[in-house]
Image 1 (tube, rainbow, N blue to C red):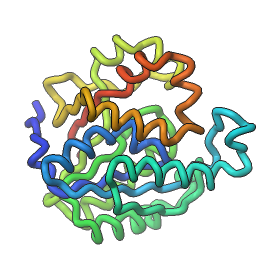
Image 2: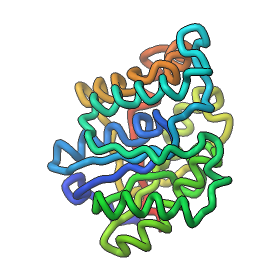
Image 3: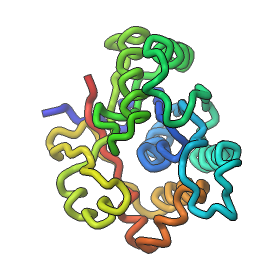
Length: 237
């Protein structure tokens, strides 16, 4: 069993992600709760998401998607109160083609500057199996070991069997593959916001409308809120 962490034990937190909106879906509630417990929270985004899909070509044209998503992420981070943000400015959809040593070097530099006690990132599954997700997660593990050693814990985003069963229909629509699944007893941390904390997470997600609007419309507000609410973390070695 993984020893459970409390929010007060997280210390300085650094989220390391592949694309804009990864942070809102996977760490927004944790970032808010950690900050409320006294943590400083920073974020790294490897790409600006220019190769993503637009929910509405007329409103968010693909030709301008990178610029649009940079603006959306800035609005999201402002809602979450995250002021320390770094872009690596790497190619969306191309992280696996980047020389691994160079990728690790870029991530290491941010870890060295921020000096986190806790890093939040993807597991080896990449949550959705996306190559960018898997790559940035793997770089992060190597960079953390090199720069921080045992001083810094690395937590990977995961889900639980109960969550996967409850939201099977939504997951089929969104993920197209099985989400990673960790038994509740093996989680390092669970954050399940309600009330104003959940409202803030949903606002942060909706601040990136080019990526979230179509899903909210497809499943409805109530289901979307429930599906997006909880964040689960497992220790990553």
